[in-house]
Image (cartoon, rainbow, N blue to C red; front, side):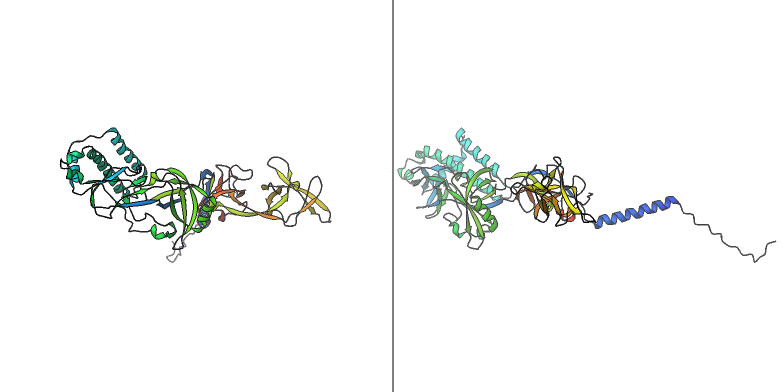
Length: 466
């Protein structure tokens, strides 16, 4: 019989480690360490090199100035135009009539209520105006729609006026009524416009940024059959095909354009291209402006005061790379006679050193060539591969040369081989974000190469993962 005071001891199982659990735990810890390192380290992002060009940074809004003469009314009454906006007139051509009694205005009103048909020539006038407007319309400049509306209205009234001239006797048998119409003819030849804005006769030397930032700019369109008073503007005439556009630029850009002499200009309104002669103007507010002078196409843009243009100066084509990929690196310059060419892509040098006994020894060391200067006949080799003062020998003459002369190359890190491999680049043109470099060079880049997007986060010959 067991004792009532018998002590019971709990059995402790021995620790039984499972190998699978240990391996799984190690894997979890490794994954956590890799994740932490990944988020704390700089990521290597690659960029594929493709052909391209730089054109996006040369768009400006310019002030168009012409030789414009405003013709003011010498009497009051209803003014009716017989020359279309943008048309050329010769001396003695009928431009408008003045009706002092209002009888012409009433006749035009009645004529508009009748059923009329347009000739093929008249329909073509409307068609051409609509096509030209639709090609150049920009939704950001909605006010141009109102200008187009007024131009169409003037065209309609002009065609009506032509019908009126054919039937002028229908105004009445009263000679006084017919005699109340005064005819006005062009006193000089040129392009006719029916709008003013106060910039006629503007002196380019008085240019300032206020001209481009003026919120109160007002364009006054003069409609046919309008009631005008003495000295009111009636129309203006542009007598000279020479004209200019003034654009605001920074001082450095102005010097670059001035060095060009002439620059190709693309008008964004209709993609028309012309060449402008460059000159620089110092504004009254100390800002810098470029004046572009033209000797053609004035009539095409006679209805515009402000024009959006693109300067086609960075027209270089090549390989397009981001500026963040560009880096500079120092190299030794080695005369051509000390470089041994084993094959098309394999080069070496004869390096001289001394053994423990002080006797000279010569080693054939393979080197990578990064560039070649055709003028000095020198090769560029990696300066980090040899100490300054290293002596190399020429194979045939045993002439020696001490590595000391250095030069800098501009390039990028190619990552096709899985490590940061420096490649020289020749920059053709550049803006704030991208550069156009020469392609298919002996020691440079090829299309479809992969380079490091941000060169500042890698070092020479670093193994790369992405």
